[in-house]
Image (tube, rainbow, N blue to C red; front, top):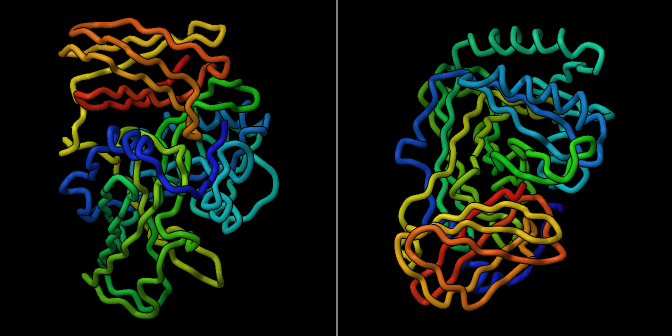
Length: 362
């Protein structure tokens, strides 16, 4: 399964699919507050077809995720090729440079990790990141994001905390999938990909906008607006749960962008004014032979519902009509030859409203 860019007029069902997840999704009211920390950007250059990325590179990634818990670090996976490739990820990797894969970067520095030195490099990552995070920040960043049913809009903010005599600074925000189940060579079809870099909110300006060039004074602030049309990537679902916005202040020197500081905020869901069945929950289990068992829990009876299952590319892979859902727990079976363990979106539609939930079928 792959994440691809497609341009088409978003249908009523697509709007329903996204609105039911998001409603009107927004970051919390404090999300645009400026961080007092110096953050570090860690990147894995990877591809779904890469066997090394799924073997020792996978283990090293897991170790870094464990080591960086509760630290001011953004660790994202940039798929420059393969099923999860995006143009934004390609641009980030092209800016960093380096041949082969996997490559692990701190900032723009290739840390030279290989299968034979992984333990040593794990310790080096810890020491380097702790040293970088100990520096007081020269600038802080924050962001907010909203969804109106057709596009996600962001407002990024940077505040310079000290006087700086020179430089060229760019501000950008990016959409990151916190957890995505998809194929990975050496891991199989049911691999959990964390922190997948998806899209820039600034079109083909992958490093955002130039907010200032030259001297800057302490307490100067700049904002940059961005947006991403959902119709440009119909694989997006449930963006209100399990996605984040990463905001990066880049310093551009000799044509190369280096992260100066950054921040990360989860997208959270608030109650929608749309007619949504907020009381419904769905879990799933893959029973084999193209069959998925759904457990649907509701606090009300729902009559004549239609249940859809979408893959991450927005295709309908299963559907069942005239479903009766009763208050309490209900068992439902969907069948399709296209079903396999992966990430899907379950949509329940009825005259009483609708509900969409991102589910991982294992």
